[in-house]
Length: 181
Image 1: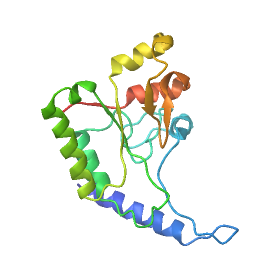
Image 2 (image 1 turned 30 degrees about the vertical axis):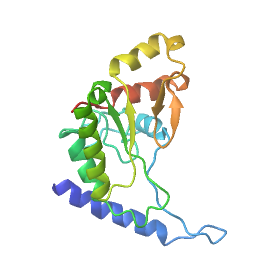
Image 3 (image 1 turned 180 degrees about the vertical axis):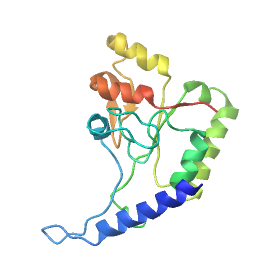
């Protein structure tokens, strides 16, 4: 994809430029890409973007695509992310994906997921944070939080109990593409 070439060039420029600088204590800075949930609040302040994201909506979560603009599915997303060079990204990255639980109900579907992950890492992928939960479960957790005290989700570089998150972050997690194989 042409956009992959652009992303690679921009990523290389960013990570290598960060590595050229030292902190006040002479430690080398290392690039990273994880939002820690800030992408939701930055999106509130950001105008519409060329990828179809509307004004006020969350920007991309770490290296994951912007919600609702993903067009070619999880395999294409992971193939694109795996093309990036992580030599200068020693501070880490986050790739958040949401998987529908039905994807892991049979041995065949578990093997598909295994091969998806194996292929991603063999192609150079650095990290992935899958959350296995349905949209219906997340929406029900917003309505009946008392029933979901142990529902853990990936946010943007960390795990959290879903019901303890603010509504904007909860909505962002719900809006993530629910991948089905």
